[in-house]
Length: 488
Ligand SMILES: [Zn+2]
Image 1 (cartoon, rainbow, N blue to C red):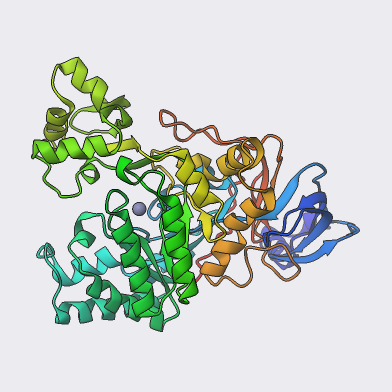
Image 2 (tube, rainbow, N blue to C red; image 1 turned 180 degrees about the vertical axis):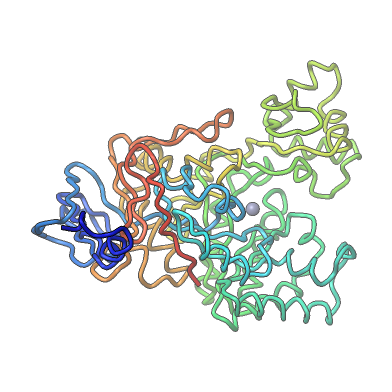
């Protein structure tokens, strides 16, 4: 009968028809809270989960047989760098293939601006995943100080930054991010951060920080992040927690102690951690005192990560022939020292590097803390295997192979824990009334496949991903659906 209708009328009929309900049957449901898995069926109507338990499919329902598979809430990536790429790659294959259904952008102190414009753009051109945005400290700092940012800000400037943070929060940002190891943020004093964090706190936001030092002075940097939370009365999220130099290796127990002491004083401190022993950043980060042409400083920087063999160039516009080689190998081939090579590379415009500088003992201790979440610090197009591998790597390597943590614990770190930090009341758990952001995967085969050489190889074992009840990943490819929302 529908076939006889003219096209316009037919479109109207299709619009009026509700999407068929989906019933996922016989899954091992891991609900996000940390509770043990239980076998259940899940019924989805429109964008919501309406029933969990013994569910009889009705005529016209779409039935998904999930026997042997795990059904979990969609993964929430609280530190993601897909800010601009959501526009050019809205299918977000590297993200949805690993089960990510919601991302937080604007991390490390740099955010889009104005926030309202960014969110309006996302609403106009939605992607496969939901998006939330932070307002960046460095972003507002540059708006206020312009090119004259290489100094502490004065009170008037701090007040203007705070006003911009308030504006960002009013326009839909969910918190304040900082990147104190990066150029613009590194010149700020703690006082400046406390004042602008107060502005975010007034609007119910939280403070997320790539702390000032992840190396020899990491403990001062952890203390600063906690102090900002304490003085501004704002929850703190330590981004990609790590101990990244020889001098602080094996000190994760002391970090845990420090955070637990803060919890006892009533400071709400959490963190996220990516499951790799190597970081990806600019080559300059290796020399925190910024004396990039001082051989002694450069030598210390290289020693601190365990030597030039632990630093691999992955992008160098001036010298593409260096890519995927270590500083040690390049220096040997040129018969120069790694220190001289470093100085030359910075002079020629710099490069991005992968530095293997964390150890398993520390990563494991962080991962087994209840206040540490899983986040990728990756993003569409970012050349690090964490871009396409993070969540399956935790499930395959840390849960199944190494048994560092149980499956329900790992899932909680990917779902309910970040949802709580982000105050998302209707995501992050499988229960009636929650939004149907869901992942279905095979716990026996889920695994990452991305490497530093091939960072975009998709993982295996992810059988289905739904965002708001719409399937975005069918088990082998993206579906082309873009149901992602801008959440504020
Ligand atoms: Zn960062």
